[in-house]
Image (tube, rainbow, N blue to C red; front, side, top):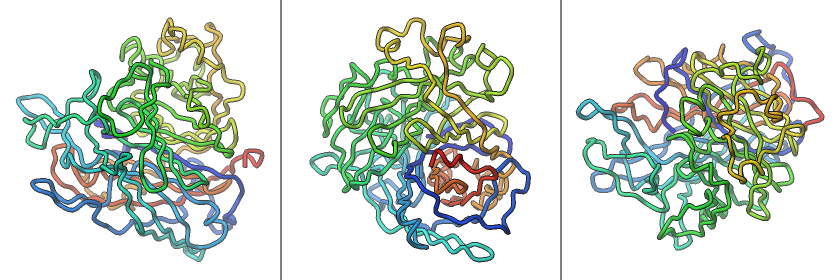
Length: 459
């Protein structure tokens, strides 16, 4: 996902998580909370560059970048100082060019296949602690015949218009094109991935073969090289451009996926939806392949007076990271304009299930319901875990983005290690700036310690 919003400190935060229970890292008494918002950077490292795709024709080589999610094998974390993790790239190098006074989105390498990468992460809890990581496997996503997927849009009515770097030639549509953003790994060795275009959920084998793509009802992808199943609610097709599914999590028993739209859907229109701040959170049954529950997540500080009665949410709110820490509890990373980046512990047990309302016609649209109390809708409960805003400039420096022209720092992957430790990774946009020029790039990992541990009952 590429965003053009301006943020304090030029930082954008996003991401997603995989979870299994149990504390693993001992608290370090020499690393104390510094009072900057409830979290401290324990260690960081830049992942060495590798080539993801060789140059072909007029398309340049694609180097490590575009990381959009992170999942860590916590069995490895508990057993050794070398952890195994997986990350997923997005659709490939992309930017924005201006032609005749109009901005156009570009794909620099239209043939690039989004892929899952395996990482080896070395952790040494010495003084100071040491963190290092390297790519040990790259796995392009392919259809059932072994043909690589692409990052091109599908060519449906609400897909973005994407052009080549010149800004004049439209990129050909692809029914198997995906903009992958969220990743979880199953104990059987497969993956679930959330993507933005349709939006959709992808069921993927351990070798990168996409077997099924779950899309909103009524969606037809003629010529797709995988099974397309239209079981998701139809209203999800009204997702805002470039704001489809982003945050993905899986319950400890792997029976359900939780997936969030990144921002309110354009229902009945974008202006109304942005003024209200209701985002749909869907629970998906991994056994039946059907939606199970839907809840409302309201953007903004839940302690603000009038939050549930319609107080305006923060500008350009986004939900791009999520981890399940129990059957009905999630850690969510929320961001907004002005440098807002906060971790919330959310509880779904008491939230209203709005799925029947949605499937019955959704009238009026949930996105337009300003007073949730009056409508009898109880949103997801939110409790602040940490405000990450005070540390974002330090993270930007550690990622090597020292020049303002280097673009924003975008953290798009998040994994919960234990009650007090969280691992983050950034998306460097493959080193492509908004004008399709190259800029300093680097994929960085951070290990954070929360000042307030997650409740033990959740682990």
